[in-house]
Length: 106
Image (cartoon, rainbow, N blue to C red; front, side, top):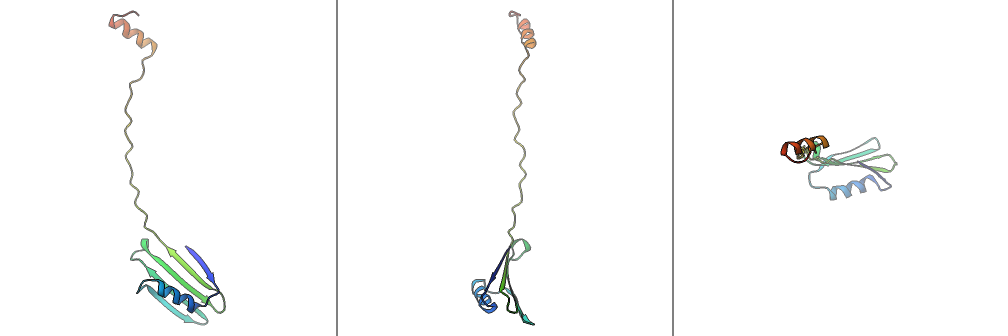
C-alpha cells in the first residue's frame, strides 16, 4: 500500500490515472460537498486486485492511495530427505570380541 499526496488538482490527477489505467477499470467517480473521489481497479479476485483511490477534500492536497495484492504461491511441503543410516562404530570391547570369534588374536 502506498499513500501519496500532491498539490495537483483532483481533475489533473484523475485525468492522469484515467489515461494510464486499462479501459473499464474506473469503478467510481463522485463529487459532493467540496470532496472529490475516484477509484480505479484492476484484477478479478481479491488476491490479484490492484486499485488506485484518489481523494481531495476542499483545498487540501490530493491524496492517492495505491493498493496492490499479489497472490502468494502455495508453499510446497517437502518431504525430508532420508538420511542413510550408518552402522555404529564398534566399541573396543566389540572389536576384541569379534576378533576372538574370527579366530584372530584377542
